[in-house]
Length: 514
Ligand code: FAD
Ligand code: DLZ
Ligand code: SF4
Image (cartoon, rainbow, N blue to C red; front, side, top):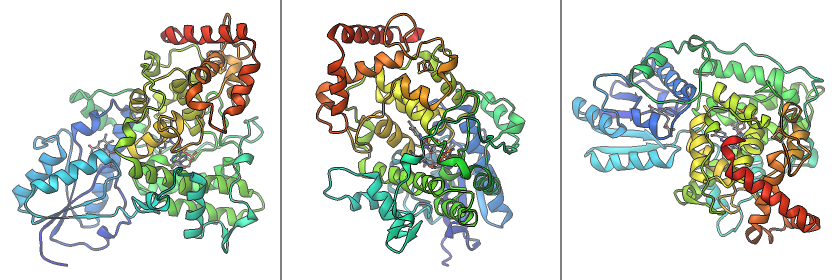
């Protein structure tokens, strides 16, 4: 190791203790980590998201320091905080005469640009390193699909399974079948109790006080700041992972798509935040789950483990690949030219539509909703009402604790809103009350009538659904996965069609009152 005095930056989502940077302690190397106002403001964030990041960053810094590494940690309210990555880094380099600046590849395009820009302004050596977190390189997916029109997740997933020998029997998938998605669509009937975990109880009172003092604007709530219930350390995340494999994996796949009033987590892992800030690595998570499944094959069926593995080495890794293949253009795509604003009740949950009340309410209380709530309740409603993708992105990026742009925008503009015109998905994810009623118990307690398409108390999803396909006929009719829908629509009598469209238009015009 040379005697060059090095400054190494660690961002809020780069808390990977197992990174090779930390294998040795060197007196010439200093790490830095900083809380800055612009990162709390680029969208209005959920209070728990800001707390989660700051607590985890502080914890990480103190663990590094305990191990003997040198670290400069700038708190949001520190007097010398210049409130910008650039200004803070330049200040530290100048004050302490660093000769080299090193950072880990950021996952976010915006920060990548900021850091590249800093390297052009400082007159010292700069180096960029991998975060050693993902299974694939930034541009690996792009290279994999070079010259291809579509970027099918399934093809990517199979290649990753083969490359890392995950759930494989030689070159073939274990059991002979790659994907058990069809088996994972059960409604929850209460037959198996939902496991409860003792949540971490992290003290966030100081951070809450600091955010108040500094007048940082936030959304959502935290019920008890002295018992913040998200993992902020690797130890807590590993405990969570144990809980998941031991108690939830057994039913993960079966009830992955189910939604139940007042049961926000069901059998989901809640690991996305720990994964996204890199307290856990995707490979260790799937290995742990597979090892547990192998020891318990008599009780845990294969579709459960395949379903879980697919989310992490399939969807998660694929979304990252799409992000780097398609940014920055991706963030401006608007295939349907949607321009509507979100109604104000997305920030209060004060709506009569019970499914939305539940999904938004729990998001405001917990900074969490599971995948089908995000896709088929909030996302579906936003798409069917023609919400502008910028509005969609900002809401999702702000409200969820796990929201970092690379994984948020690919899910919102791509999977949920089809604003990319079919890069991520082959057709828009939409549904009417029929699906929501099949997969949840929301409709039972709703003032709207799930059966009605128009008239008094007709469920808004029913007319909005048909209106969406009617309005976007030119863009969608040639999609082979949608053609059938237009056949069904054609069979509805013109008078009936008119009533449905009028009902949808009425709801869109009166969206605040829904
Ligand atoms: P589980 O259901 O337990 O799944 C296990 C893991 O698989 C997750 O922790 C996650 O790492 C991964 N995973 C599952 N689905 C996806 C997916 N579609 N894309 C990427 N990873 C996936 N996930 C985020 O991490 N951050 C986001 O900002 C985000 N925004 C979303 C927005 C929309 C509109 C939709 C439809 C999905 C979004 N997702 C996002 C994906 C998914 O909903 C969350 O990862 C999941 O709900 C997190 O809860 P969990 O950890 O309990 O997941
Ligand atoms: C989300 C977030 C917040 C609220 N604050 C900070 C911060 O002060 N400092 C920091 O390094 N990161 C923060 N983050 C995470 C970043 O916004 C961003 O998502 C990642 O650093 C991009 O890779
Ligand atoms: Fe949602 Fe319609 Fe069911 Fe009400 S009736 S919960 S609005 S799908």
